[in-house]
Image (tube, rainbow, N blue to C red; front, top):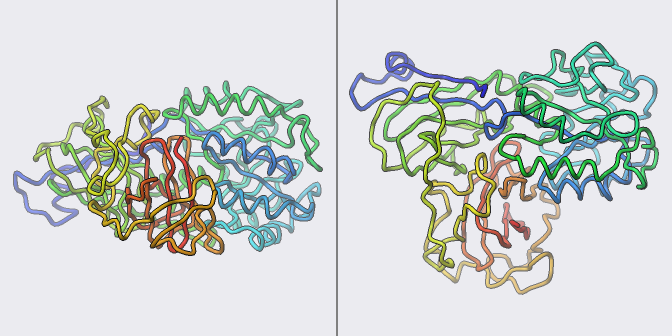
Amino acid sequence: MDMKKFALSPVLAISAFGLFATASVFAQDVEIGTWAGFRKGAASFTFDDGAPSHVSDGGPLFDKYGYKATFNVVTSWNPDWNGFGNMAKNGHEIASHSVNHGQNMSGEEASSKQAIAGKIQQKYGIITVAYPNCNVPNKSAVLQNYIIGRICNGSWQSQPDMMGKDGPSDWAMASAIMTGSTGTNDFKGNMQKAVQQGGWIAFLTHGFEGKNNGSATYSPTPIGSIEDGLKWAQQNDKDIWVAPMGHVAMYIKERKAAKVEASGSGTITVKLTHSIKDNVSDYDYPLSLRVKSSLSKATVKQGSATLESKIDGGYIYFDAVPNGGDIVISGDGGGDQPPASSGSNQSSSSISNPTSSAPTSSQPGPALSSSSHRGFPNWGHSSSSSAGPANQSSSSQPSAFAVNGSSSSIGSPFAALESNKFDANPASAYVDASGFITVINAQGQNITVFNSLGHVVRTTKGIGCLQKVYSGAKGVYIVRIGNKAKTISIK
């Protein structure tokens, strides 16, 4: 598995961090996963033209499987702004496909971005563009406004159809294979190739067969073929990372530019930084890290945010945001020992789970049952101690919750809050394919997750573009972000 490795020798560690040479101090092996969750390959589903079927059929299909896609809209074609806005709040990427869909969108690079930004709230803005008719406009203008520009099949322009682990050779010319009647409907096979080759496959779809596609009539695709691909991806979620095109592009650019250092013994401090922030993006998408450690239990914090983590095979796994502050790993059960070499094989280890009995006032949250997860890279059955504060008094808990949007009495501190809406607060939450409650647009806000009994199961702070905040037993939860709350289900 390819990954970015940083193995600091004790001498280098002493030089870098000003440590004294003692037997209790040792350098840590710290690595950045090539793909999120240390998966083996990546896939992005992109949809052009802003068709009505993208809102009525496409978004709900991806939500069903916990995945998110990129929807490229033509701003002058009267897209369903409300529908696409709701999709953005639910984690999908809304991106540019020009103003007028002419033969070449030169001159519309900035104006199409601005038109969408005036309608759609996304923490990271409009960072992806797909070219009408596959014609590349002014590359300089593209890269001044977006982090990635998408063509069609790379083979149509003497490029590979599948991108490698470092993305396209030209970020203004990212490949995507056409689907439908003039392309492929083999989503599963192409994702399998991405896993086998360690690459990134992107799909280009217009409308769906038999659906209301508006102007997106070119090369219609059977929506059942897409669903078959999503089913396979969900079953193989430990191997294939399915994410919007802009998200994958951010991850690659950050991973390539990142500098990561780790030091310490009982308490480990990790510094994760890069210097690529520009006028297009803060590049604050979380990167997946693993640190060699002998700890058997650990809490991982970045600034004031508690991070989801997992201990497996002698490594602590977690996602952290570059330039988000020092990452501090503390715990017990290991003692000091030199790390294994960076080339050692990863092996499984038993994970200590909370008891499976129903939560009580001194037991904050449901049991984390391995049967409700798909395994690594799902870190829900973690030995992390970040499950939120215990011993919450009943007087501070909601007395009841709305389930699936139905009305119910909601006590303090949720009085006067709608349980399934965020209103003006752009933050939102959803459950991803790995079973994590994930929040978006929540940077700097307090986040609390309650189970159906009203017990706090997680408290943390919002950081970065998006953030995994909790994964536990199946059931209904309330996610409170700032002063707004939402009902959500882990199924």
